[in-house]
Image 1: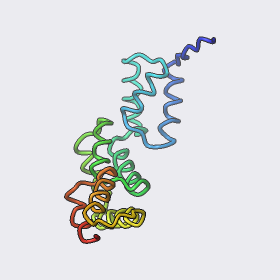
Image 2 (image 1 turned 90 degrees about the horizontal axis):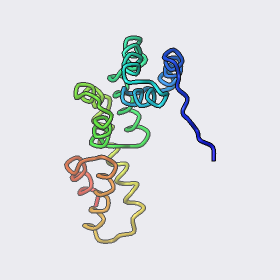
Image 3 (image 1 turned 120 degrees about the vertical axis):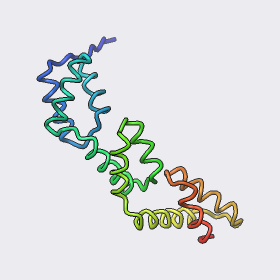
Image 4 (image 1 turned 135 degrees about the horizontal axis):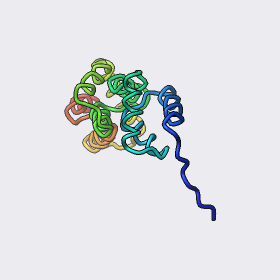
Length: 158
């Protein structure tokens, strides 16, 4: 069995690789930090490279949060609660999260709840309206929508 030893990069090699990594798609500081550690850098080197990336705008938490929130809402139809939870897990500041939530239009958000409800309801073959409501609500909550956001919409549907 071969023993694979991780290659340790120099700071300049790591910086070049991580710039490419950040240019490919928006990254948060947590992801970049983890990637730099995987290159075999020490903590002071990681922080030095990360500071340079922030200065050169390769890493921008606000821009990341806005892109993440908009993308997850439009592509995966995630609700605000799930997006906020994921951003917090990535150590994004409350200010950046608040700005990111402004990326989601309220009318689009409500339309998304309605569309997801109707699409899921059409797949259900349940006759009992209360059980059907419960199933739809559970589905929406699992997608990151809150009970309060969905309850009236689902109630008027069934």
